[in-house]
Image (cartoon, rainbow, N blue to C red; front, side, top):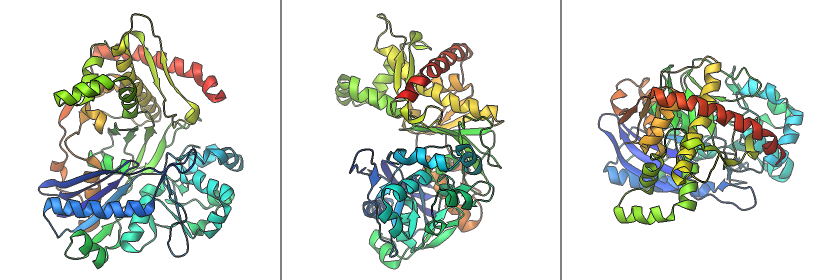
Length: 499
């Protein structure tokens, strides 16, 4: 079975041909431009997205040397909002999760709605990133645009519309909208009505393994296909990653150490935090499986920030040696012992998604003395990201969601040191998948279920190339350092809130 898979990320568009017998070929990756037309805006042009998808698919088919496939499947980022008029024409660009303009009306929204009630009904904490907040902002600040809107879609929904002519949203992506009722797996009429929004502006919901329609003949031929193919709705990108890592086993957690990072486990029922802190989210995956867990802003982006600002020489040396500059930074950080000689790093240079301290949190380096060197700061950065992810781990376990191992992918998974730190901090073995793209692989599993009714016989495509076990001595050190991390964070919460 041959599947064309596309993953639309916030910054990257990827595509490949997944042959369920032979593996992945024709991989193509391109950067997606983020538009910033005004302060706090972060948008994608929908026409550019569609054009790039067609270009990617054409290039993938050419590289793979095929002109016939069984289907096309998409995965895409959460939290995007695009307004369409009655003719299906865009009234706005796609507002991505990076777009902060909804913060301007968030307080007003949650004066109208009870944030705890919204969390219990939708599994989504009261944050600006969600489409509920974005649509409310559009109605408040762009009233004419809201009135002219016939349909709100996300980026993937728009691509499905252009590829099939159908206005739909699959339940997996809808579960990250703060508009979906967890129990009914349908739009939450009460929240929508109480927020003063219009239910009829939201699309029809379908299951992720739904065949939405067929690619038109004209598009099929333009990208190099001999004939039209069915298009499968697919899941959101994080769910695709989890599926690609084999993450529907209920005692396995999955993670994606990229720009941001996440930690999720599979559950047969939607689980929310019993604590009033609302420390994690619950999104839908596929076939009755849910993915309770947390995504955090602070992943590999923190190390990239350090590289861009404090490692110019290493970038030049890496080019001369033909190696990654991250490999050089990894080697330097390894010279500092576990605990970074007492340096503690709060990795919130991009704010954070925890409602308790959220968008006003900042990065903090604590404990510096004259004997510390750059290696200590580097290792503290890696440890800070691991400690932050351990906050999610702690919340999940307190709610009865434990796991025996973490399966991880993403650029950060190439760092053996970072994997060891994560194993020591989380207290479980880490299995790394670095030789392929988990999201595209996971989407192909969804496609096989849609076409053939099951995903049997694809396990051989999930190949982990590294396994790292926790080191007991390091675990003891990190248990104490994690206490310091939380103490420092709690001490700074009033300052974060005052910003």
